[in-house]
Figure 1 (cartoon, helix red, strand yellow):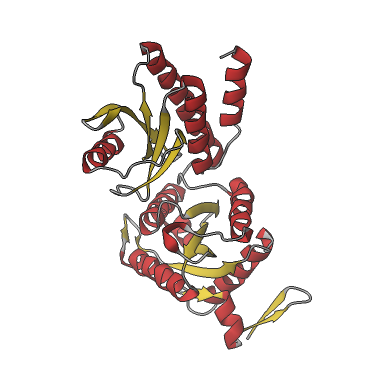
Figure 2 (cartoon, helix red, strand yellow):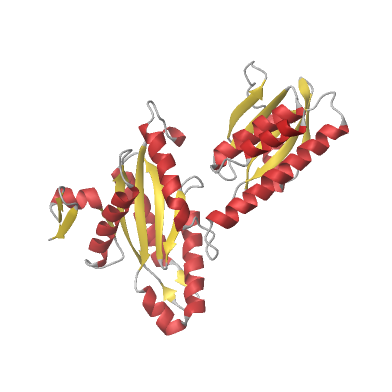
Length: 328
């Protein structure tokens, strides 16, 4: 392949920002440059999961079901983060290469049939994977909050546009068989100013870090978590219903309440959330969730409030013409 063609492939690869799209672009680039029989991308459905989605680039015949032996090797590759060879009696040997996400977790394995290929093919693959992971690190530095490791505010608009575009697509189906509903929640640590005033900003930063870790552990890997500024965080979630979303947020709130922060003790949070539609402006959905959060703050704190439920019950009155909210 000519140098210009190689560079063109790399330009396409590094033009992606979405994690799944980036993985697929890598698989296509590997297929185009190394020319194996097939490149197969195995993506773990959840962190530590034994279940993988399968995407094949190359051969048109259907990908065989994952054998138990292959599943074990995929899990081993995912857990160790090391490349390895999968050997089976009934199919060609496969080279398995782990792929890291922007959170530095191995979330996928790319499998390549290199039967009859020279050692140079392995070197090409290794170099492409280094380029891929270097690019992942650059995305991580650019899109992640330095203190907490969560997504930062400047990535919010692009991520929301991606979600709304998928929602607006005909027949769009969500991960895990859910029905396509997405919710935006704002989390605000109660009385955080008191933490900084009484314990200092270093302890305040530790509280923010631990809070973000509790958020990450409480929700799924594909849920989007942002540090929006100061002690305010935003989450974007997929759920069957607002009732289920309320339950999940309350579970996090109660877990937070039970956690003892070093030198500080108990910390609570108020949460407001709203449903996202494909036609929402990002500012509008944030405003709605913020109004629900404001209601929670003014009605005892340490609670979860759903904007649409508050409007439906009459606790909030929405002026649709002006987009204003009155509290009752």
